[in-house]
Image 1 (cartoon, rainbow over the protein chains, first blue to last red):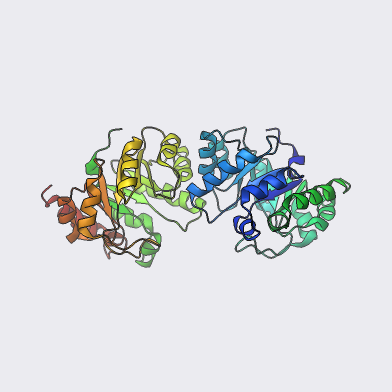
Image 2 (spheres, rainbow over the protein chains, first blue to last red):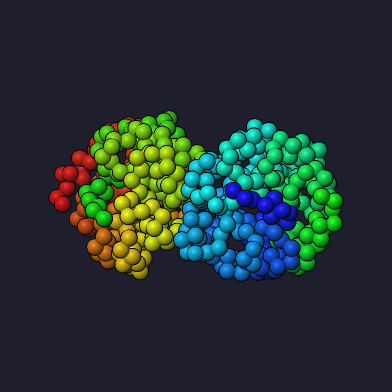
Length: 220
Length: 220
């Protein structure tokens, strides 16, 4: 596995409802953001049927710049189906209640990117020791309504503590906006995952650009 | 594909809530029913996390008689994960909003059983013409609360009409009890899928036995 941690720097997680409520499709949102500084896109939609999720994935894959990885949230079958359809999907991000990482790695093969959500010393070490995980997602930084049943925001101190438990590349998530990027980078995070900062933005491209600029100008 | 239509005759679809409300696990229910006349078991749980669904599948696979096929509802990734774990899973049953049958067939391989739900002339012919589907599930016969957002019961006449559109083996579903078996068999169905008739029964083994006996004594 040769996963470049810089890939995580501006990590867009899609939210279908937020995009639609902002007057555009997920595909439009991704297309605008991906050309303006986003370094990775994860498609997440826990409500869509498998058929709709696959259709959305194929549509988004078509508009993605080739060098930006496109990940699928949770559904290994959607990833495999997209691969069968020769879509340019790069890997998976899976939550703690999804299939175990070792199983997912066997199903998606050695070259796909695999990230897992982890938010305890135990699960972070488990991810690291599995030797099949490319990066971890840690959160939430702030309270967030984007994800159902998400725990309360942990704040910077706890996030930094969690990040210290693993040497895997790590991306922070949870209500993140541009002003959070300097302290997250200082805490050792390799990037920030955003949802509403781009999906709810009036101009997703401009929002992505501002985030990317903020990240770059932060001392690494 | 060498799929024996008789495999469909007493087809148990599991319902986790119904089993638990009846004071036993899904595994206990399946174990009792599978030794008393059930000819196929489909594990269905649209609420469980992928991790729990996989754990349940592995547990059920261990108690299944070897000759009775165990199918997974909707989630191709669970089927593939169970296969990786060397569990004795035989195939998949997928709904109309799930991955397309041709995609599922490619993912599960040529030997796995593949059934699809279909309830219109168009979708039944689509299943037949795909040449990758082993059987169709048609329903609901009666009104049912088991499945969320299920349409109203179609009744015997419409069910017989639908069954006539395809020469694929067909199983009926939807609030079916023992007294429905003779007219379903007369309408050309190869079997009856039951949920509450076994999952809610005080004695799942006795319920399965009665259904199997009713099916056998019905002129084919």
